Image (cartoon, rainbow over the protein chains, first blue to last red):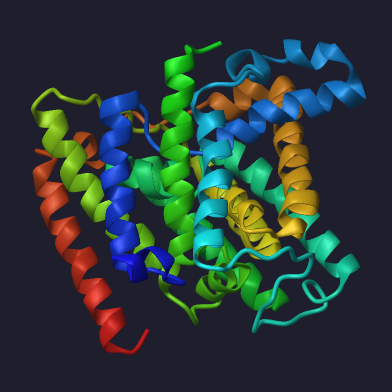
Length: 170
Length: 178
């Protein structure tokens, strides 16, 4: 048991099964599906207001998704904490600015390249998630297992778009 | 604002989710990009296993009236370009919105400083785009949200074959050495 708690990693089938079980409890306890990307949309209103003033809070999208702390925002904060706990227990926590990778490229092995790839990638990710209406967790896991048509198309689109881009840039 | 109890429920769910993502290896740039380059199938294994387990459980619970499902809707004009743009961003950044939170927790400063600001900017750009073009964006939504509704069949007639296909796929990728 102790070895299991401090192990570097767990089998993807154990982790996947436990995420599936976590989804049951999320529905039972919170009446919500696991998802994360809406939180960044809510947060973006605050950032936008810093640059463009409080009028952005009146935008239609931010009327639908108000910039306030709610269940999912707390879930995202929880992910940071949970990952930190796991990383510390397994000795995997380390501060890094450049990801350690086998797939080295100008886009990930120097600060400017990483700043560019992470920032531009983030923009695409944020915009794409809002247009598609979800991300890898909201569509990719929670949506697909509810047999949502949009979620299955999204899951395929995420990985097709991702694989094509990855093969081009790396 | 939501009640304190709900906020704590969200936080607790997130802590477990984050722990699992990190322990599964999917808060690591190398593992995520490795999946997109088809060299490491950890991400697919986790997602597909979670889909099968999640699907069997929530439909069982929903049949008994214990939970209420909320399948997402979409439209071709939103879902296809949105998911492809998301995929391009996923490859560039190397994280998705959930795993970036996990990456921050395990100390990836690039995720925190550059990636997170990018996601906020991208989401803000969408809100601006939506402000002007909301009618166009919201048009032509799918008439049916789920496959059982579309095919007008009992959901278990989708769940059982789909689970079988996923399990066969997972056994196959293991058997060819991934």
